[in-house]
Length: 396
Image (tube, rainbow, N blue to C red; front, top):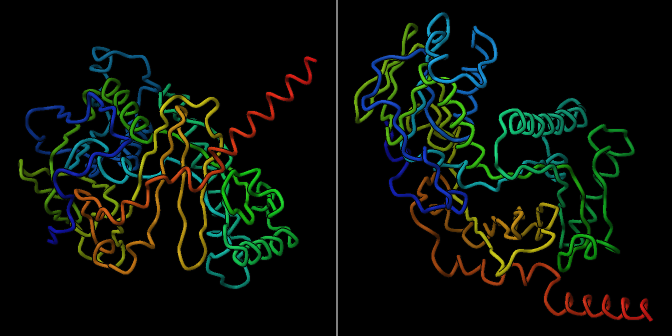
């Protein structure tokens, strides 16, 4: 067992977790069940959605939406598997509670997919199609379950501030477009002539506009789990603050050892992301934890309208990429700045420590971030004055 890869206690509180769910520390029963049909380890987006689809897809009595606990009581056993959802810490306190909150694929990522047998175009289209299906499935779940998680279908800008990089990536894209690669049909290029004006990013030398979705991951997970707990009270058992310390498997069953006791499960789903090798050592050097930075920037007042696009800003080959996800209240979640700590490999590679921030000299990257990246301040005031003059002239 490699305990050092298991989740650490007392993680830094993420912005996404700033509105704590009543289910944050839920334990459905005071004691762990001795056995279950399916154990899902990890209560983030992957784990909760896995449990949701197992429960929903195996419901013999049809769609149980709207049934209260008493109605569900009569249909709880016949052929319907029981699910145990476990997490070492609070609900959704891992990667789902610390990511960018938007779904997209960068053009740069598509164009750099490994080629084999000349089928690069097909792979790019397949990847983009997969991401599009993820977006639509999230949308379907949000609407079907009436989840309040600020979901929006949006566009996203892949912005390049290095002229050579912008030219190189555009040439690759144009070659793919001329070859008729299907993925290019929902992507458009913005040249250097209008890149700053359209994206509002200082020094933009070009940008792609691509499809994306934006939402509040924590609220998606917690509100969906609330529906599940209400709908399947006898088939779903949720246990937070229950660290699985080892997993012993055989062809007939699996034994999960925790500090609160052991559980026997017919099947196990590991939705453990960076911590997978802590339970399955064969995944060491295959699933590698990577630590990064994210920040939340809040305006003094509500912004009307909020930025309608998400962003990836490419700062050139020697630096890297930041991601930006504007929120409806005018705030913005920003992650990146990896080049400031890239040389200190131990601080980020194979590192699951989310209980500490990077040193202050690195965190200083986020100061004045919006003012330095976006065309704001004096230029906006000049624009307002121009509109005022236009209105006065019109009324005259």
